[in-house]
Length: 170
Image 1 (spheres, rainbow, N blue to C red):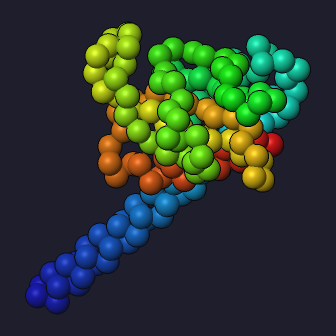
Image 2: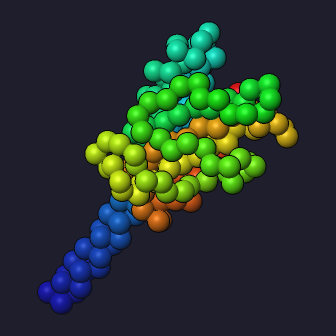
């Protein structure tokens, strides 16, 4: 009976370890599925943007992508004119205006701004800026209002924004 009880305990422990391993594998698979899904959605976005012949045609696809990838509830796309000045091309919702001190930045960055209107009027909210550069030439800037951004999410968000910038420039 002692031997059976000991064997039973060992078997139960091995089953727990096995279940833990299976759970870990399932979690890893879920992460990979999410990554593949994001990649496919980015490809789909680039395909739709490449097919658009005007900014008005592109706007719904961009809006949908920004909501999906960044949980953005407002954005503005600026392009550089012949004089090198950013001009707003499309805007959805409440977004900050470009700040002079940020114009030379080449990598995505976060900052806060005070919402001038909407449900967050007068409150400080997050903005994600994605500078659009082709080699050494600034071609534009995408500014987004981001909701619910925890400090531990910032590095991943900025990395994803960098990948998104490459796709958008393309």
